[in-house]
Length: 438
Image 1 (cartoon, rainbow, N blue to C red):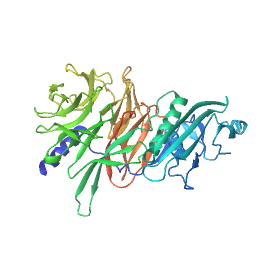
Image 2: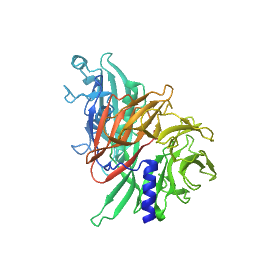
Image 3: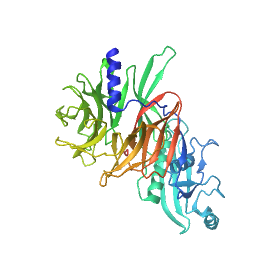
Image 4: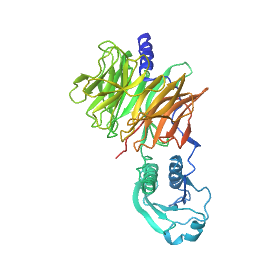
C-alpha cells in the first residue's frame, strides 16, 4: 500500500491529481455571469395527455434549463398563455413582449404505464415576427429515454437558432471518492447526462481510479486504475461492460488520450526511467516512444487532425505546453506566459487549447489561440483544474476549489458565460466531456 500511495503522489504531480470536488449526482447550475445579449425565448409547458394527471417528466422544464445553461438564451419565467398548437398562438401578444421565438409541444402516452411505456413527443419552434414554423418534429420515446429526448429537442432548437450544434444530449464521465465510518475509501468511475442526471457507475474499486478519457466514437472509456497495487491503463467498452488492459509497465502508466480515429492511445509511461510520452496501437499492442528528454513529459492531447500531440513538460524548468509530431521529432514550446501551463485540451476545430494557467500560485483556466499565441484567462478563482471541452467547442467544464468548497464549474470559450455547479455527496475529480453521441 505504501508503494501505491507513492505512485499516486507521483501521478498527482504528473497528471494534476490535486483538486477535490463533489459528486455529480444532483446538479444545480448557477449562472454567475451571462451575456447581456442572451436572447429571450418562450418554452411553453407541453400539453400532457395520459392516464395520470401529472406527466412523468417536465420536458419543457428540461429544455428551458438546457437553453438557459448555454448562456445564449433567456427563457421566460412567466408566460401570457400556454398554446399547445399553432392555431392557439396569438401572435400579437408574443410580439408585444418582444419574444422572437416560441416553442410549443405535446406529450402523449401511447402504451400502458410502467418501465416499458411509450410516449409520443411532438414539438414546434416558431419565428414570432415572421409567424413561420422553423422546426416541427414528432417521435415515439420509451419511458427511460424521456430526459434524453428533451435534451435532443434542446439540441435541435439550439442549432436552429445559433447555427452551431447543441451538446445537451452528451454525457460526462468523472471519478468519485467516498469514505465510510471506518475511513475506508471507495472509488468509482461514473457517467451522467450533461445536466448531472441519470448517473451510474461504470467501475467501482477499493483502489484509486484516474484520468478518464472518452473514445471519439463515444463507445469506450480509457482510464487509470491502481488495481493490484500498481497503475495500469484500461479501455472499457461501455455497452458490453468488457475492458482491456492496455499498459501495465513498472512505474507510471498514466494520462491516456484517444487518437482521432480511436486506433491508438497516447499515454505517459516511466518504464524506461523518467516519464515520457508514448503511443500504443490498441489492436496490435505496438508501442512507440514519442518524446526523448530527461524531463517529466506527460498529459498528451491529440490535435484533431491526428498529426501532432501537445503535452506538459518541465524540460524548461517549469511545467509548460509543448507540441511535437506524433511520430516524434523536435518539440516546440507553445506557452510563453505564466510560470505554469498544463493539462491541454483542444477545441474541436483545433484552433484553441484550453489549459490550466498558473501564475504566482493562482491556477485558472486559460484559452490559447494557436495561430497568434494569444492567451486569455477565462476564470477568476484561485484553484481550477482538469478542463474538458464540450464537443461543440462552446463550453469548458473544469474542477474548482474556493476555500473549503469544491465544485465543478463551466465557462464559455469567449468568457461570456460562467456557471458554478452545486453538487453533493462524495468527492469528484477529472471530469471528461463525451463526444457527440449516436
